[in-house]
Amino acid sequence: METPLLYIVLGAAGSGRRRVIADLIRDGLGDTSRVHVLVAGSEAEAPGEVSERLAAAGRVSVGAWTLDEAGRLVAEIPEGVTEVFILADGRADPVDQIEAVHGWLPSSGLQLGRVLTVLNCRLAVDQPGVARWHDACIHFSDVVILANREGVPNKWISDFQGRLRKAHFPCLVEMTRKAGFANAAALLEPQARRISLFFDDPEEWPEIDEEELLPGETLDLVGKEDPYIERTPAGRRAIELPDIRRFLGPLPEV
Image 1 (tube, rainbow, N blue to C red):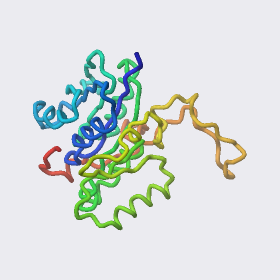
Image 2: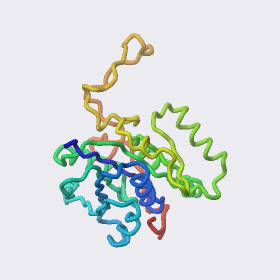
Image 3: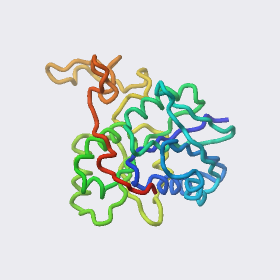
């Protein structure tokens, strides 16, 4: 039996992450798939409502994940599943959660498929202060899904996509549609397209020709910590993110 794949879904509460997961399961996975969705225990929505939102996708069970006092992820994976989706807490720091999943993954019996960010475009336009929070999510993501685009100027969408291209982000960018995704299977393809190397084996990092380095540049990747994971001597993150809750208010989770 093949190792079950893990998909991590980041994004702010109210971005439509459950709907995205349901569409990906329905349109991107085969009839023989058995999917387990782990929802953050701190999410406000009742498990019954979570199950109802995902039931249309079929072959789906729903559980919860939590962090213990030491910040370690705690979750149970049913036997026989083929894919697992972790729905991150949309009101908490995504980097803390990525670090927790990273520590849990080796003992989980799962293999990382992809990390996806569901980006609430309306929130990004109305609350520019969330940009640094979203940037952290995108840093770890193979796929960025643009959701809640109603009323968002096309120029903002094109400028956002242009910014990612200019920064040479390798992640795929897709948009939500009422009919679902045109090629959901491609979004779930377990091929790394993230700029972060945090989940990757250093032995599998691409080779860099030292002759291609610019004057003054050095080749120092081995042992180099991810900039978002790195901490200062005082124990704080080297890159601190804003508290997403300041920008959300009482948004419903959908």
